[in-house]
Image 1 (cartoon, rainbow, N blue to C red):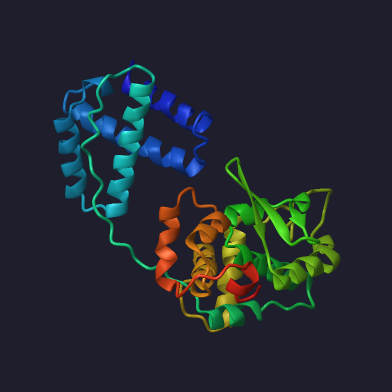
Image 2: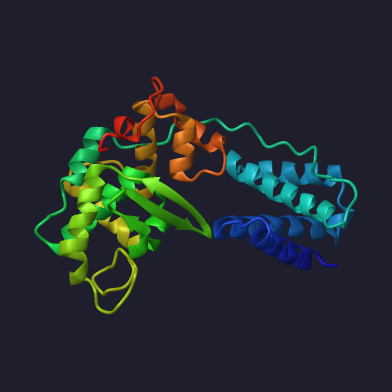
Length: 294
């Protein structure tokens, strides 16, 4: 079986059996097609013919390209996942990727907004207009929950439970329930009572709509943030991801446990949440005590 077909079958396996996100699928496919091109240049036409030495040679080629360590690590993860799949499906007996080790990554603290900057940002929307009411609800909710922008713009009316202060997040087929605080709850209530109908052009269950009545887009929300950041005098290059990092860092600073941050932000393992440990002074339990707007 040709390498392109193996990659195609592997990506299908990741999608169906492992429930991989679309971003993971795209990255793995790109990485493995790059590996296949390298192997063909080395006169290797099948993944099953690859040796440990071949893969070490490929790793050296990646390092010569001066790629970011995170990119090299992802390439290694893609290769190892492919060979685990090939062994699982009986296409190989020995794993040539087992000695591939990702380079040690320097853990950098994510760039965040201060609590004071978040407060300034959240004071910018004009709550006398439907757009300002909508924007305020989106920003309050994202900061309250740390959800991904893809989750924010995918929210449906049925996902919000104002009575109990919970919201259901969906992203690439995965779901999780997240609590939100009083301020986010009030902002959502005002939006539902006085804002959303102004954007409604036809029946839709999408929670956040743009001026055309269509679902808010990633780019649309990014522009909302950039506009209010400029008005608030925030000079940082603000992004939705920075808002997400700020939520996690501020909760860690309030004493949230790493397991709590992992669950709230939807990380698949605790390692990803550990990046916020540097913001953490001591452990507390309740959400209302650890979130600045809880």
